Amino acid sequence: MNHIDSSKRNIGVNFNQTGAAVISLWAPEAKSVQLKLANRNLSLSKGEFGYWSLETADLSAGDTYQFLLDDEIVITDPASLLQADGVHGAATAYHLNNFQWTDQQWQNLPLHTYIFYELHTGTFTAEGTFEGIISKLDYLVELGITAIELMPVAQFPGTRNWGYDGVFPFAVQESYGGPEGLQDLVNACHEKGLAVVLDVVYNHIGPEGNYFALSGPYFTEKYKTPWGSAVNFDDAWSDGVRNYFIENVLMWFRDFHIDALRMDAVHAIKDFGAVHFLQQLRKEVDHLIKTTHRMHYLIIESDLNDQKYIQPLSANGYGMDATWIDEFHHALRVTAGEPANGYYSDFSGIEHLEKAYRDAYVYDGIYSPHRQKTFGGKADGHAGEQFVVCSQNHDQVGNRMLGERSSVLFSREMQKLMAASVVCSPFLPMLFMGEEWGETNPFQFFISHGEPELIKAVREGRKAEFAAFHSLGEAPDPQAESTFLQSKLQWDLLKENAHQQLSDYYKALLKLRKQYAPLSTDRTQMIVAADKVNNCLILQRWDQDQYVVCLLNFSKTVQDLIMPRARPYWKKIFDSADPCWGGPAIAPVSLDALANVTVQSESILVYTSKHV
Image (cartoon, rainbow, N blue to C red; front, side, top):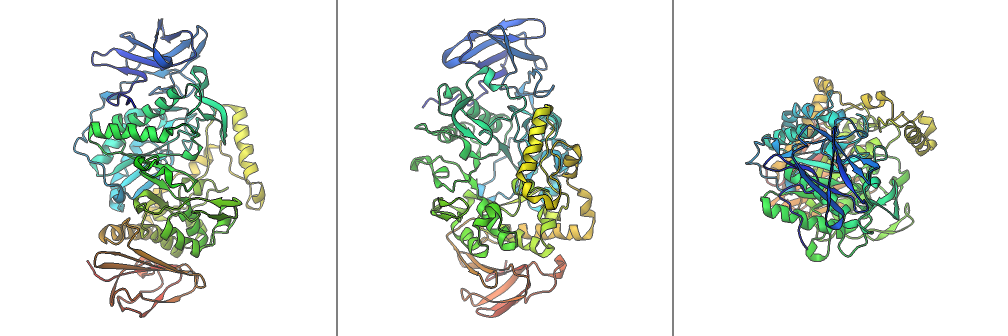
C-alpha cells in the first residue's frame, strides 16, 4: 500500500514555504474547476483519480474563496479549515502551520493511565469557548483527570449543537474559537500534563450546510443509516472519500497535536471492501507515528460487541486501540435502580454488572431479548485499557427526554457508589463534566439550525421519540436558546459545602486508583462475585503481593459481608460512607480474613493487604 504523504495536508488550501497557496480539490465527475475569488476566477488542472490542483500567489491567508464547477455550480471547499461566515458561507483561507507550539517536550501518556473527562465546549463554561476550558485546566489537574475528551468541534450550523451535525470536518467551530483557539487549548493542556481526545464523526455528515454531493460521490445508496444515505467507503470513487477522512485524522494528530480520537458509532461506517476503512486508517496512523515519533490512539464507539475492531492488524483485526462499552454503564445503572425499560430491559442488574467486570461485554454470544437474537462476541485476551467505561456520558444523559443527570435520579450515596464502581474497574474510567460535584442542571439535546423545515422535523422527531412519556411533560424544544443555556454547568455550586464535598470525594477516588497498583487495567488478576439476593458485589484485585478488595452494596439496607480469605489481614483505604464525605458511618479500619464487615447501604468499602 502506498502511504499518504503524512508530512503535510494534501487536500484543500494550504500554503508552501514561499507563501503560495497550494490547492487540491477532489471532484471526480466535474468537467472543469475554477477557484472563485472576490475579483477573478483561476482554473485548476485535472490530475489523476479525480483531483484538481492549482498553485497560486493570488490567494492569501484570510481571503475568502469558493470553487466553481462546470461553470455553474458554486461550492465551498469540503476541506475548509475556517468557516467565519458559517456553514452557508465561503471558506476563509487559513495558514495551519503558523501556530507557535511550545509542547515540543510533550509525550502522550500511556493509554492505561488515561482518566477521561468528557466535556462539551459550549456548555462547560459560561463563555462556551476553548479559552473558557483553558481557565479550568488547573481544576481538572487537581481533580485527578489525565485526559480531556472534547465532544465534536467540526463546524456546525449556528452556535448551539452537540457537534454531531458538523458539516465541515476540517473546520473548527468558529464560535468556540476556531482553529487557533483549539491549538491554544491543546498546547495549554500539554503544558499542564493533560492529554487531549477529540470526538470525530465519520459515519455521516449533518443535514444543514451539507453540500458534499455537489462536489463528488461522497455518499452511496448501497446502504442506509439513521441519517440517510451512507458515506461512500466502498462504492465507486470511494478511494477519494476514504482519503478525505484519513487526511482529516492525520491533520488532527499532526497539525493540532491531538493525542487520541474518539470515533463516533463506527458500526455505521458501511464498508465491505477487502481492506476496511479502519484498517487502512490504522496503517496510515502507524506510519505517521513512525515518522513523527509521537504516539496517538484511535478509540471507537461501537454497539456490535465485536472484538475484530480492537484486534491487531496482524490478527486480521481493525487495530483500534480501545472502545467504549455502554453495557457496563447499562448494567451499573440497572443495578443502581434504573428502571429496566428500552435497551435497559436487556440487563438484570448485579449479575450482569458482575459479568461486565469479568468479561467486558455482557452480550458476548448470548441471546438478547431486547434485540431478539444472539448477540456479540467474547473479549478474551484484550486488556482492560481497551475498554472505556462510565456511569454517565453525553449520550446517556442527553438522550433522556429531560436530560436528567445522576444527581437528580439517584441518592447522593448511590452517586458515590456508582463513581467508585467505575474508578475501581479494570477498565479506563470516564467522567462526564460536572458529575464530580453533582451538577443539577440537565444536559439536553439542543440545536440552532437556520432552516425552518429542518427545525420543525427535529422538534417533531424529539416529540415522537418520547411520545410514551407524556406524564413527564413536554420534551424540551431543541431549538430554544433556553434549552442550551439550561444545560450549562453551574460552577458556583462548588462554593456550596455539599457539592465541594462530593468533588473532594472524586479527588480522593481518582487518587486511590493511581496510588494502588491492583486498581489498574489488568483484567487477569481479578475475582468478582455477585450476591443477587442482597444486591452486593465483592471485587478482588491484586498486583504481585498486594491485594485490594472492594465491597459494593447497591441495596438500600445495611449488609454484612465476609472478607475474602485471600490474605489474613486487611486495612481500610477507602470508605464512601465515611462522614467526611457526608456518609452515615465509619467502617472498621482493620479486619481479619473471613471476618464479617458491615457495609452501609449504597456504599463501597475498599481494603488492602499492603498499605502504602
